[in-house]
Amino acid sequence: MTRAVLSLGSNLGDRLAHLRGAVAAFRDVLLAASGVYETPPWGDPDQPPYLNAVLLVRAPGATPMDWLERARAVENAAGRVRDPGRRYGPRTLDVDVISVWGEDGEPVRSDDPELTLPHPRAHLRAFVLRPWIDIEPYGRLPGHGWLTDLLNKEPVATDARHMRPRPDLRLESTR
Image (tube, rainbow, N blue to C red; front, side, top):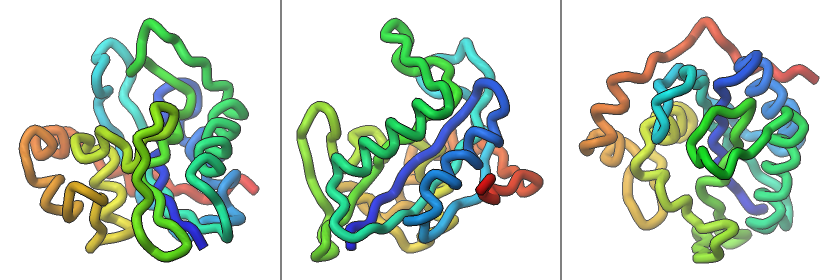
């Protein structure tokens, strides 16, 4: 079985419905879904706040590219439109492949420009690390260390203070 951590984010339209749609799309391989967090936009402040969550998924024989293709299909189903002029701009749904572990349990490393693993900026993103801790409190980001240590380092710690847990929003599947 290969295992992957996927980060979800939405700040356009029915944000919660987009996240729930992603959970539904991964239901057949889903091990765990984090809580939902409301976060300020990252990298491009001129946009609405995001809802973010993380999924832990597992499937026999899935390659990193399989996870990426599935993530893109889920984004497309949510009406995701990529604006090349706004790399960190608003979106209906963003599904990022953060890390993948192979059949042997070892982290997969890749320098492929289409899918760099682990995600090259995950260690700098509170909106990835904090929800991930919900589902793997003793998790490690390959090549970077313990999630809790990364979350407590600046500038990530400052970003984490601006996140708001949303226990009123649950990620039940729409299936």
